[in-house]
Length: 190
Image (cartoon, rainbow, N blue to C red; front, side):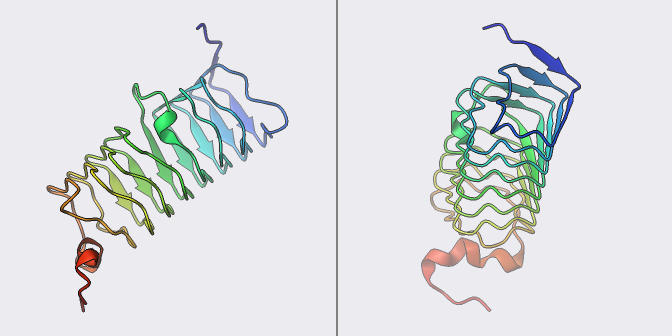
C-alpha cells in the first residue's frame, strides 16, 4: 500500500471526530489539543510524532504503526495497543490517562510511563523489559506471564504483581511497594 507522506506538520485543535485524519504516514508531526475520540486510526503510520493534550479514547488501532511516538497530557482510555503494527512499536507516556487500555502480548521494551494513571490496564503476556513506571498509579493493572525484568517500579504505586507468575529478575521496587508483591499472602506489612 502506497502511503502519502506528511512531514513536520503541526496540527492544532483539530477535531478528527468531524473531519477524519487522512490515511497516511505522519513523520515528525505534532498533534496538539486534538480530539480523535472514537475514530479509526487503523493502517496509519506515526513516526517520531508527538501527541500533546489530545483525546484518543476508544480509538481503533488495527495495524496502526507507532514508532518513537510521545504522548503527553493525553487521554488514551480503552485503547487496544495489541492491535497495532508490532514492527518497531515504541512510544512513551507522560501525564496520561490510560485507563482500561490493553498491551496484551505486546513487546514494548524500554517504554517510559511517567506520572500516568494506568487503572485496569492489561499487561498480560507483555514484554516490558527495562521499562520505567515513574510515579504511576497501577490500580487493578493486570500482570500475568509478563516479562518485568529490569523494570523500574520504585515510584509506582497501587500495583499487585505476583512474582510467581511473572518474570521480575532485577526489577526495582521501593520498600513501600513491597505490599504490592506480597498481596496474595494476605499478610500485614507495617
